[in-house]
Each structure stands twice: as C-alpha cells, then as structure tokens.
Image (cartoon, rainbow, N blue to C red):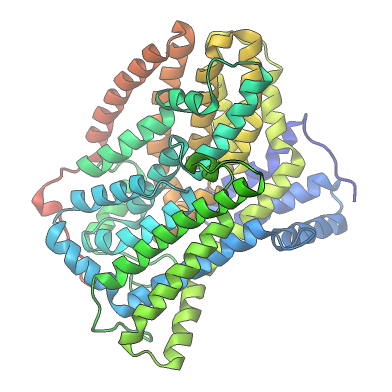
Length: 531
C-alpha cells in the first residue's frame, strides 16, 4: 500500500491535534487516541476506508510483531505486568500498609511526604520509565496517608523523572544524548571538546530541566498548588482518594485482603531488589555489548550500549522472585496466588491499552512525517542567530508535544541544531543543542500522548488526563522561564547571562505561584487518610 507524503504540509499535524484536543475536551483517552489514529490513517491512504482499516491493522500488529517479535514494546508491556503483580503481592502482604505506618511515625507532614517523593525521583535516575513506576509505587502509601492527591504525586514523579535523566550522563537518556552529540561534533570537525564534556557543559544551559527540578522541589517544600491542582488537593485533604486503575479506594481488593503479618521489609526488600537488579542488568547488558564489540568496559560505555527493555524485564523478574519468596510466610493458597497474579496484571491493563494506542499513534505520526514538517519550518527560515536558542526550544517543544516522544525529537532536532549553529554562529553550538534538549522535555511533559506521561500517571494511579491538565500550569511556567533565558543567552552570546535571567524570572514565577496557591503549609493542613 502506497502512503501519501505530508512532510511539507500542515496536514501532518492533523492526527496529533485531533488526539490531543479530544483528550482534553472529552477526557476519554482511548477514544481520543483512536480518533487521531483514524484521522492519520485516512490522510495517509487518500481517504480510502478499506486501506485505512488495513493500515490500522498493520500498525496494531506492528506493536507486537515486526519481522519478528517487537521486543521494545512487548518487553515494556511485560515489565508493566510484572510490576503490577509485584505491587499487588506487596499490598496483600501488608507491606504497603506497614510502610505507611512506619513512615507516618517519621514523616509527619504533607511537606515531608512530597519531599521524600522528590528525593526518590532524584536518586532513581537510571531510566525515566523505571523512575516513574518505581517512585509511584514506593511513595503512594505515604502520600495517601497525608492527603496528597494522586494528581500532585503524578506531577512530582513526572517532573522529576525526565529532567533528572536528561542532565545525568550515567542514565539511559544521557548515554543516548552523548552518542548523538559525539556524531554532531565529529560531523562539524569540533575536536577541542569531547562528547561527554559537551554534555556536562550543557547541563546549566538546559534551562527547562534545571528549573523544572527547582520548581518541583519548591512545590513540595511550599506545597504550591495552582490551577486545577488546587481542586484535586482540596479533595485529597478531605480524604477523597481513588485508585485510577480500579475506581475504588486505594489498597488491596476486599476479595484478596491483606495479611496481618506485614512488615516494612515486605515493601522495602522487593523494591530495593528491583532497583539493584535493574541497575545491574543495565550495566551488564551494556557490558556484554561492549565485549562483543571488542571495547574496554566502562560504566558510561555500558549505559551507552545497554539494552533497556531487556534490563527492565530481568530486574522485574528478579524483583518478582524475591517478592514471591517473601510471600511464603503469609500462607497464600493456590487460588489466592492465582487471584493475586490476575489482579496484578489486570491493574495494569488500562495503562497497557493506552500505551498500545499511543504507540500506534506515534507510528501514524511518523508516517505523516510530522517531525520532518516541524523541523523544516526551522531549517528553512532565515532567522537572526541570537533568536535561534529560543526558537529551537519552542519548535522542539511543539515537536515533542505533537509526536509524544522526546527521544524522537532529540534524534531529529539535535542534528538540525548542530547544522544551524555551524552555519550561523559556531559559538552557539552548545546553547542551541541544550535548547533542543530542554524543549523536548517540555513538550513531553505537556503531551497527553507521551509514554512517560502515561507511565507517570500509571505509577501514581492517577487519571491520565487529570495528570496532564494539573501538570500543565507548572510546565508552562517553567517554559516561560526557559524562553526568557534562551532569548538573553542568544542576544548576549553568554550562557551565564541567560542562566541569570532565567533565575530572576524563576523567582518571579515562584512569587506568583505562592500567591495563586492559596495554601500555607501549617500543621492543620496535615491530613491522615483513614484506610
């Protein structure tokens, strides 16, 4: 089947625009994603209903099978199911309740529960997928106890995961970006700086990531709740917490119940095992790849060559094995084990359905060449070099928002930014590359079709659109901070001037958010939710 090309047409934006607008208006994610897929399929096939259905069918099959098993997507779904089973078993063991009781004695405020979530997000920096799911499952019992809404938890998770990963060299993101930077530097014969040195030098220039982290810390410390987040926080303080995956109050189902023998170790040991096993697997699979290529082992080299999806599954299987061993003392019979496993898998089905549809939409958007169209708008323009960092930030943000992928945006926009810097002003190379990284994370945070956004809401058991709409004011506020910094950075040709400007604007944003928040972090704000 021959597909039409829309690489030079604004119609390439139709599919993501339909999906995103419908998701916001109807709050029905699957319906919205399906409408976007159908819109794109009709455009690609010249409005032929039969060809459109055939294309959609091939796209669906492609999620699972593409000249062999599509390991990337299948293993991510398998990891989700493994995590669902681990979470259910921990809940049945009483580990989550015991951790909540333990933490309640030590973390006595809403502020403390939120700060702990942010701290965990910073510590678990290896991969954004793993970060989103692991931090959510660890923090949820504690934030529930203190009346922190699932929407706020989702924001704390999502706005920590990607920003930390994108500025950390030893992470799946860092390794991928360093590899791209190395290719760009070699292409333009820049030899006075290495790829990893360039990456580290770009960290303070990645204004969105730096100030998104600053805002999430301030939001936890000062309990800042603006826009729709205020409504969710009011409800949470009144004890209205609901599990988005089950539509019931949080915790194990009445049918499964909880063991009375639960201890904190029933949660801590499986989670710590999961983190260590996954990290070790990431290093091991990367080390094997280095060995096969005849290269010397290094931690950074291992992360650059690691197999993320296999590592997640290996870590998940080890974590599940340890969880099951610990469950032996809770005397579960055969039917109870079966029910626990089925319930664990079922709890992840909503996220799995959304991810599959989102991946199909990403495939449609790729065929429409939406990214190429947006990139062409920049590369074909004759803009003043001083405006390029800000323009690249905005275009990268629009691309990640429309395509739902920050990694895809990196792959397309970083080489374009490198070419533009080499042609316009070589001294602006690193600021322009950094602005692409920043814009991609910004767009990813705002996009309802982003897989990391989906997994953050999954980890927090929050309704997906609630997460998108409540995070949006925070993301847009930081985007204004970043834009101000990039404008000055380009005009003054100084990264320090740009960062200083962004810092001043961030201070003003913080004052505005404190005024809009309407809450003070006082003892009477601390609410313990009864289970």
